View 1 (cartoon, helix red, strand yellow):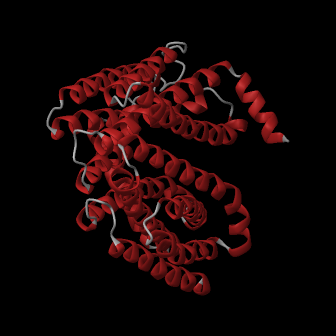
View 2: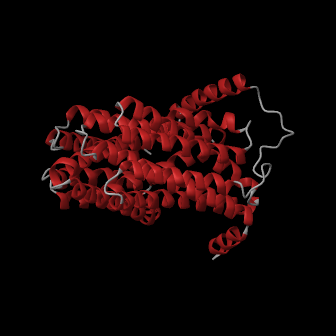
View 3: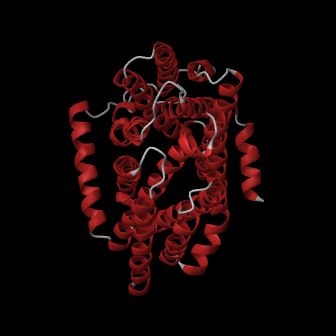
Length: 419
């Protein structure tokens, strides 16, 4: 197969392998750090976890991506990308060490969140730089394959990092500070790995004069506004994005529910609850993988809006059936199915946006897509914080989520018929 052949060629390219190594180490460290933050907020014995605390943690982990992301490229076009990987990962390693000290010192929550926010904000620059550097290490003919391989490998590395964090935490007698320190070591390894590439290799070219910074930032903001206006004129894309954002909202609300159930209801102790959470995350991840396998066929069979209708209708029926008993086994089944449903709808939405939006606006619309996706997730955590009792059992929230899915199924079915 040509794809397999191209992959073999890519992995024989020395500089591609070196860039991929930086990505894998960076995103593995991200996975470790994010799980360490989540377990510290939710499962620390000395902390009385609340839905509000979980919402704050999600805001710290996700909002920097949304707020910094669209403007990261403006600065990346002014800095040598190899240096971004070197100093960005060194900075994250240092800040992660600070976070570990803060965990040990049991400081006020705002100081802990400020440290965590600093680490995750830098991450946007590193990830954007990794994508921008690919054309410097891969020829144009294999760039599509490289763009597919690298982010997928990075996501798997982040998932592996999350698994390593659970393992390190158990070995270290449930010490969150040790897990954060382990993430700091991985960030340091990513920084050192970047030194295997020359400073000039990844660009930008020194002879190119970038647009003045103030003007570039203004242009970026105006470009996003123009992308929003263009999206408003493309009804299928706008409705698909609205639907997938609401589905992300539902997924986020149920995730907070699972966190509270694992912490206070299902596990007889902290370790047992954490183990159940790990199983739920793995089940949801398996659902995401299943969506990648099933969705291409389903989109071809039903069309993008038809597949989204199937996903939302199934969720409307399954969420109350599996969620209202508030017992572990049905919820774990729901975790897999909702992973499949949520990711399947996202794949369909990507297809709609790519086909309905003009090429000259596509990048800006996907930037808005990223912002909307993360803001919906954080908003869900905020709503859950208002509705969930300490033990996580809220029939009202489960029914509300099911009603949102049902309303989406009706709206998407109508859009499919009108389209």
